[in-house]
Length: 155
Image (cartoon, rainbow, N blue to C red; front, top):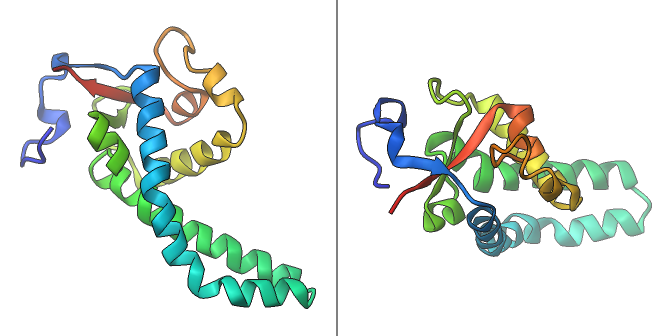
């Protein structure tokens, strides 16, 4: 899909289908591959300071700075592109996009942020993919909680 002046809400949605598990998983793997250098770029300037604080027993400042770095990283790579275009780099390559489940409203920043942080948390728990076929709508638990779907562009 090219980025045009026509928004998804104005487009004919019959040309889209719900994204398959394979496409979603491949996009996730690509995103993790592309996000790793950004994580290093955001984290590296603070790594020495973080190690020093932890060695000195300053656990609260350590975790506060680590969480701040994580929020900046997730915001830059996952939340902003998903909010603006409905796609991260991985989703763009695979040809899938995040939209509202009812397809009639633009996603809110808070919804996208909640969804992306929850998705990353759920990646650490394999159960997220066990909920993939929730109600036969190809949605994960995160999709259901945030009222979103991932669509695939038909070729």
